Image 1 (tube, rainbow, N blue to C red):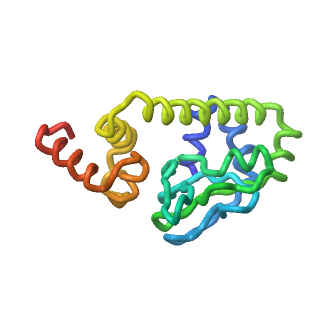
Image 2: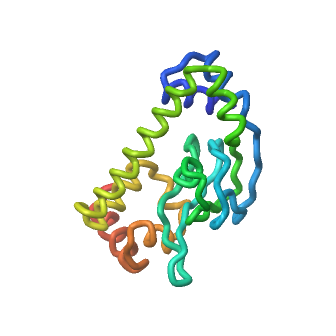
Length: 193
């Protein structure tokens, strides 16, 4: 948990003691590949922090999965819209790999926030980060080519290209799998990575 603690300290600019307090209410959970963390149609009452592994957040449309995002080491994961609004989730969060994460439920998080004012700062920063990530994703669809969106994904985490099946990357980029093949060939021929 030390790596997670250092990530929390760095991300939220808090002391080691504050990180220990924040993480004290999290429970370690082990999930297998294909296990569901958040189920479509149910209210999301938990937030996870991934220690090891990979997850996908998907919507279902006409029998197909539409990938909204991927979450991996040191990422928070939840259907945050459902968590905040207490409305049933429209998406599913499923493991792409065996995943170890630390999970906190709404009740424990509210208890912490009531006892320690610095938790409000963490919550505000999480909201800001979520807004920025969503803004960047929307902007990328409006202004970037599929190649540029692929490059952004890989720049963020180079190992994702090997960890995520091509058809899921295609869904995330909103292109056909053949387009991802062409993008990869173009990148390889140009020696970009």
